[in-house]
Image (spheres, rainbow, N blue to C red):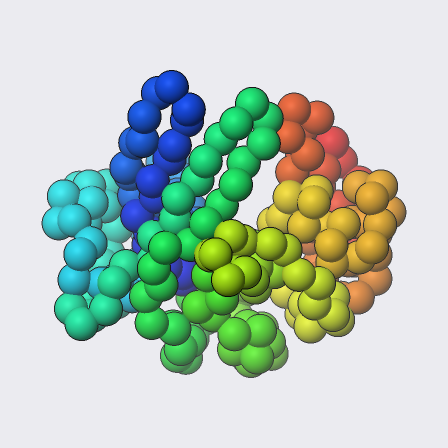
Length: 217
């Protein structure tokens, strides 16, 4: 499996507990999760000259292929500041690595996990149309930053997701995409536009899985 998206540096701030800095990004977590199940994983990503070498070593020791992780020394790594106050989270982007152009992925299953619009929806569509098995976490294509770098969600045409085999998203993202706050109705709408399987996370309420076979919680 190939996992595509920016590896990030995350600054996690909790008032009264300081700031913790760690590696993040869907490419990081999806790759490590896949390796725990024994799947061979390669990451396609771009990082800046400031990306810590010990983060890469952690991924290597997990058995992840990093041959397609490009280090651009003249750029910064995508970096976020996550500030938590009670149940609320503010996400701010501090730096962004270069865009990732999807090359021919062949028959290798792909997990696309953009976090800062580094993958274009046009590229996602092209990969899906070539017959590759594509799973998409759309958070990065639903985000936009204001003048202060604070991340807000934006709506895109859900028809752009036609052909995606597996769509993994959070309930708020599903609501933004479909205009429907009910998870069952939102998942159903996404199936209607041509997504094969929807995995909709609902926080403490669990996960809703939806496909032509039915709805499972």
